[in-house]
Each structure stands twice: as structure tokens, then as C-alpha cells.
Length: 250
Image (tube, rainbow, N blue to C red; front, side):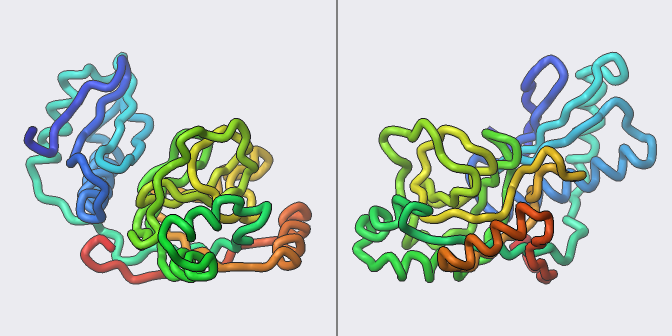
């Protein structure tokens, strides 16, 4: 298959596919194309697109067929793809997320450590040493699929998923890490939990994280976890953020 390519994904959506693997290079191309498409929409050269959704390897485009027909949309998309684009963003925001690792908050931390023949403290050190790129959101509202995890702690999913995972749980599945935004089923290896609410229907912006954002975890003990939780519940906690310069899509 030649990339990029356009695939029909529903009655009112198409997917522009850029590859079949998780990589920062593909993510950069998706971002650049999304920016170019947004510019065409802003300039009034394309009508009928009401949402774009980035994924690991593609950009989903939702459109109104009564405004623009499928074939016409594909032709406009192909014209944009025919031109080389570079992502305009030279920096990105990094958000720091507190996590209480192990124990009842991370019941699978010991398993992950044992799987790699290392101490749990080493798993925590490795997990908190990286800045993770959020490639996409999905599964449940605001579930963040993050890449960039050190392969030394990559661990397969559980053979039997849990029926209920508490909101805020931080997990590992293969070479990915992520945060469960609401109570839900799931099969990721749970190594910790954050008191920060990833999803809150009462906030002006319900979903805290977004694709393209970077996340850095930092370890807190149970006492600090509970202190932050009380601030979160009172609406008085804000995650620290800082700007990171981006080079070569990383």
C-alpha cells in the first residue's frame, strides 16, 4: 500500500492514512496535514468539514455530505496531499501529572517489575524520566494513548481485562502508557494513579489532555496524593505546564 492514502470510514467520514506504525515521523506528517487542512477551511476553500480527529497513523475527517460530496472532498484532500507540508509548531506544551505508584493505586507495579527483573523503584524511575507524546484520544472520553515510553518497561496487557478500573489509573500496555479518565473496564497493567481529573463534565473544557500535548509524570506518596486530591475536589489544583522546543517532530 502506498501512503498517504484515503479510506472510506463511514457515511460521513474519511480517513487519510499516513502509515501503519507508531512513530513521531508519521505523527508529524499528520499534524502538518491537519494544519494545512485547517488553513484551507479557514480561508473558505473547503466547506462542510466539521471535525478532524488525529490517530496514531491517520487523520479522521468528519464532513457534512449535504455540503460537500465524498468525491469532491477526496479531490480537495488529494490536492493538499500533493503539496509538501511541514508542521508549523516549533514548540509544544508539557503538562506534569502527579502519580502515586504501587500498592492499591498501582496493583500491577510489582508484576511489571518482576516481568523485567528489576526493582519497582526502577520502574518508577524509568516511567517518570520521559516526556510522553499524546498521539490520540479514544476508547473512553479523554483516554490518552501516549508514545515515547522506554522499551525496558514495555509490558503486555493482562490476559483477562478487569471489569472496573478506577479513574486516574496510569497503565502500561505494550510500548504505550496512558491514563484512564473515568471508571471503566480495561486490560492495561496498572502501575499507579493520579488524583488529577482527566475528565470532568462540569469543566468548561471537560477533557484535560489533548493529542499533540506532552505529559511528564512525577511520583508522589500517598499523603501528597490525598492532599492534591482534596485540592482537585475543591477546584484549586492546576497541573504545572511548561513549553518545550520541538525538533524533527519529537
